[in-house]
Amino acid sequence: MTKNYIYILCFFFIIVLFSSCASLTGFQDARAVGEGNGEAMISLNASQSPSFIDLEETIDGTTGETFDIPRFLFPNIELGGRYGIADNLDLTLKLNTNLNISAGIKYQILGDRFSKYALGTGLEVGSFGLITGLFNTQIPLYASIHPTESFAFYLSPRFIYQFSSIGGLIGWNYIGGNTGLLFGSKHKFGLDFGYYQVGTSSTARIGLITVGVGGKFYFGNNENTDVPSSRKKKKKR
Image 1 (tube, rainbow, N blue to C red):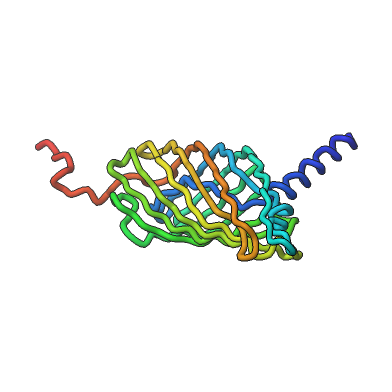
Image 2 (image 1 turned 90 degrees about the vertical axis):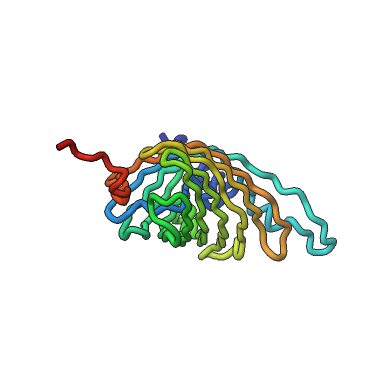
């Protein structure tokens, strides 16, 4: 039993050293879920992460030489959820098997939950493993097109600032975003792709890629009550 605990601790510290990376998954269009409604999400992803220990040493202090940084590919399962506290404002929560957890808000600026075009923004605060003291703040922008109620294309640029409350790894930032497709009228299936550049002003920036597939399950009122009366079925006399 003691050996099993040692293996678990070793696995945890390997993740901390080599995969201390903010969650880079997407699967979000710009629509809010609506007041009193909710959405649950599950996705399977493959995400790259650099070794932040190596990343801090990308530039030699004397020669200025830039070194190659290894990238590690980690599969993860991510669970997420949203709840509408207003028609255009959602609370969000995400956690995954890479020990990332985050919470935030999503605000729809343009359109409503049945608009063909939608635009939104938000704010997320996340932590890697909680006890590691590694945190990140994310500012996403959401844009999506909905030609039909069963198909959507989204684009979500994002800025992420990562910092530590216990020293080290200060000032790392990510610039990039996610794009993908969503299929389904109520419950949806999605394909997501993300690309980010990570680094600081004093280190070389490197590119990270994430890809995933996922499902989104809607709870609540999903009917469009704003359909013009001329399109509604007339009652028989």
